[in-house]
Amino acid sequence: MDESSCCRILSPCECMFKSIIVVMWFLCLTWLSACAAGPSARLGFIDHKGNIVVDLEPYHGSTFQQPAMMAFQVENYSDGMAYVTFWNQRKGFFDKKGKLLETTRYYSVGEFHEGLASCTPVKGGQTGFIDKTGKLVIEAKYSHANAFSEGLASCLTDRGWIFVDKQGKQAIDDCYQVAENFSDGLADVKKADKRGWIDRKGKFIAHPDFWCVYPTSCGITAAQIGQPSSSSGCKVSYFDKQGRLLFVKAVSLSLKNLVINQSATSRRSVGRLERGVSDSFDPSFHEGLAAVQVGTKFGYMNKSGTIVIPAKYDCAFPFSDGMAMVFDDSAGGRFGYIDSTGREIIPPSFYIGSRPSEGYAAVYETDKSGCRFMDRTGKFAFPDSFSCARPFRDGLAAIGHCYAGSL
Image (tube, rainbow, N blue to C red; front, side, top):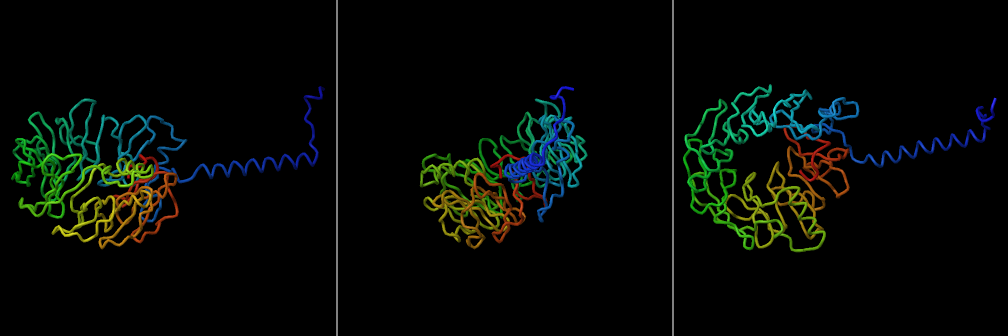
């Protein structure tokens, strides 16, 4: 027998040496795996205790046998249904038990609101509405359709925008050049080249100089007067529901105008502001307060127009759930949170954050860290961090694959 074909018996020293090499190799791989893993990339939804209650890994993990139908991105729950995009770009929904409502037979669908979701059956076709069984209950005959709000949806026809009820019947006689959803009993519309708002009976309150009308909130509607200027900004007028002028405030338009320190860090901060949260200032009232600009800084005013939280931030965002997110450029371009008295729950220290929702805010401490949830006391609510997460909605928060910076 050829010696090369025989199995050589290893000496005890050789056996021990090779065993050590194998153990070290295994430990090294384990350590590298742990380092590479970082924040959890598991796909699903967590509850207010941080527990995964809807696990979508069966639609995402390596054992899933239909690559085209692998869950690629999930949105938060809306009206008890979570919107999911598959790798083949078709859409579907999961209920709160993780059951899939497959709507891939339709070209595109929107989020559920008030029991219905907009639906376009074929590419380039008209839009209608489906119910939670996936049945088309309002005929696909509109060029575009917004979600239902306060029982009505604005839909685009050949004649212009109209409002329809849940039976698909036109609820207000007029047609409009522009029509947004109802909010607090009023809807922003444009008619005969005049911008204003209507009530549910179609009563139109307009002003010849309205440029943009914001959703009504807390009984007050904010409207930009006149065409905005990139250099001087614009004026925002505040009206009650009867169209009576309450007061006027001046604001800048772009977040780029708010940054005084034009350092590289500052410029990156503005980029995060514009990509991650909003590209414009929201002057509407939320929970009785509205952000207001004084010079180059922002604070908050009450419904009488009186400043109640001093203007000391470089950007201020709407109140939600008793908290508001603020931005401080002098702190290295960081986000923090205040309460309705102006007390800083967390001084500006986060790389980016979300508006508070259901008692939590989703935040990133650095540009390399995972996303964590902060509670109303400023403490981290759960030990885990996630590769990506969205704010809570309908009692659950999406974790896993969602667009970074889309908080």
